[in-house]
Length: 316
Image (cartoon, rainbow, N blue to C red; front, top):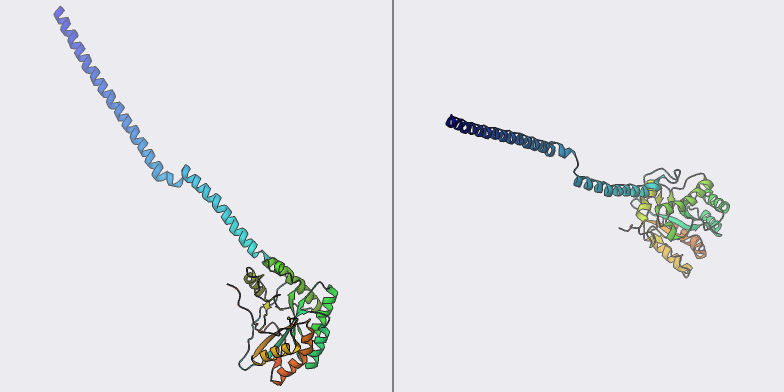
């Protein structure tokens, strides 16, 4: 009996041990299986997140990069818009300061023509110049410089020039080159002063103009291209000259002015002659210059909207 009990207890312990081992093994298998499932599930979620979801989102580093890019791009975009607005804002200025675009007619083969142009009109001797032109039966072009004269004086003088059949063009309100050529806006403001006076005095908008100091000078190197583009966009035509009489030189004699002008005319088919409305020597020589050119078969004309201009080469 005692022995049988010992055997039974030994067999019981053996069965319990096997049972415990079996249970432990099953529990381990379950734990491993569950862990494996969890790992696979986590892996699946990770794969889904990074492959399918993440590209549609922004990682922290990408977010910083994007924010930085927008912050940098925004000022650049705003700057571009601002620059464009600044560059083009003058187009909205002076909405009435436009004239029709017309075709320009150049010199033809064998043409013999002279365009006398007087800068800095009007002055005390403008009436005398007009009288000479009437006597010689020729027309010319006067470019207006306000020179701090009163509006009443300027409009009366402009009307007189216009009524006697001559062309009136814009020169400048002031010879302050540094100011008027500082920007397109500044040039338009100066131009508008003279434009309005001519329009009011004649009832017609002037279509031609001349740059103070010529289209190319040391003050407008950085702005002249934009100014020319804007003025041409508005329909205006600027005229330089092909022949300088030399009368802006206070030391020039009457004979020098005569020789320079006549020789230049006779050696060209078409001449645009630069003269100073204030030069007493020019007034003195004007009848002889006109007569000599006429004797050589030249016709005198006033510049108009269709006249193809002589212009200087603009800076690069």
